[in-house]
Length: 509
Image (cartoon, one colour):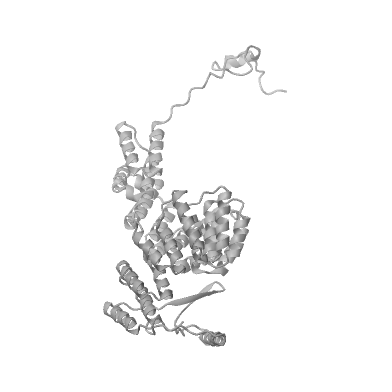
């Protein structure tokens, strides 16, 4: 028994006059292609907001502000999305939006959106935090009536970004519910500002609490491992990555290549690179630079050429790797050829690191005059790295006159640095000019500059142990010195003679 009434074309038409029956036999098989359903008119608020958003994303904040003004003059009221786009633009390009963010804040304050709308309030927090006004960001955060995890995480990241570490941790502890982004904000914040050991400590805490890290967390942890040289932790992280869904993430693989390269395990870096299903220019640059800094010049140049065969156009970082490889291998002519290709063929304007590579190229080859000419003809002022590599070469060549000129330039750059004076004193000592070394020591004393003790470090089982000269504070001191005596005996037996240095500056080598 059928429960539905029998429907014919006639009854359909009678029941709903909007539906008219047409015999399919009298209709064409395909509808008229020229007949189009008229589009629904676009909401003017959406149209204006879309235009403002395009300007904000490209850093054209003044154009976005002008568009917002035209929107208001047209009688169109902005909604919360409009304000969020403007505030996000001000946050991402703070130097281009001086004053605009505060004006928008005043507008949303009148509407009450800063307190009532969690998305607008969070956008305000982010804008002030990225604009180095973290205290204002905290005031906005405190008056928000509704907060979600994004609001809390944004405020924590703001504190970390502005180096307010204790306040970030306090806020983290106050959070009603933490997620992986909360932990990553702390880990990434410490890694980004050079506190690598603290970053790893918080990563360990995260794992103890059973919070599963995401690929952003892993990238921050690998950055810390690379800078500390903690290979064992890096290996553990790599094993962890292999069990995760993001194991093929390009950015994670790039970070692994960088970590292994900087830990001196270039073979592991090569294995990661070779297994990558997809590579970017950053991937190629990472392996090229990795080979170069580890002394594998031939491999670095091989991969540099292979990269171009694979269709990747080298950038400034690629050429830095190639020039570094030539410098380490003593390939002066080859390095100069790459430098010329970079400028002439690829139209890449040399940056200070490229000039630094050329200075180092000449310095390692003993061509100090050519290196000094490069320094003098650079379009920018040389920094400590460029001058430092040339000063080190002066020590090897015993060129006192050039060393004195370089130190004068270094003192102008950083008057309080002790390393420049120490190296100059050691250069005097190396050629037996003890009066010169003594004069440097007296000058340091007069300027109140003290030599910072140098330290060495070694990583064992994930822990970094640091030592200064003559250090006896380590719990294993007795065994360490016993091993050092054995090593010293072996060195002496092999004909090693310790270098003579100024005792006031270096204890011994």
